[in-house]
Image (cartoon, rainbow, N blue to C red; front, top):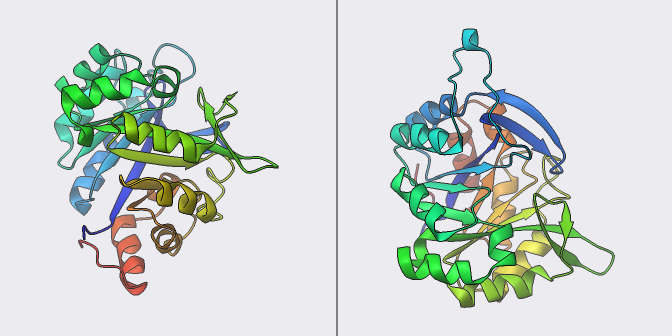
Length: 261
């Protein structure tokens, strides 16, 4: 059995790192390259960057704070990839096979696709056949409803009426190699993963599921793995705790999980 992975998720908005809460509130953290250096030192398992920009163009930031100016999102990716010594997943506004090709050309190892995968499911198969299923991550954003759960697209703004379990199964059938599962309701709240959602999706597919959204303390990671996730991810906690990788993995060890330190 593969060791469970612990993965930082970095959110980009117009070229700047941000923390997120419920997909609607965003606080600027800084330059996207600054965190990469820390994660290289910590030797984290993997790294996921998601571009959640809602408007065109990149903010230039303060030059006196040591922030770089980037021409576009692909230039951000190229800069990150050139400094990144661990497997790198890139997602956000990915809509075509040509775009995926460019993302891999600029240094990413995997691509995460959300809205376009839902609206044009054939893209999953195209990417999987061209680059391999291991490089195709389908990102699924979910909100809780009175009747259960619903898949959301367009950065959590568009309701689809689709059940996440059914969509995850279809994504696997179409060639997805991995599922990145995020909860709108838990995002940035620090209250822990939605373990019921993780259990339902993990039991329905055979491909790895990466659980995300809701981590507030290191002990939440173990609950995600016990619910069936193959990897556990978080965003905000990585920005505000020094040696977050080590702290998280020690908590997993205390819970009985064998992790790479």
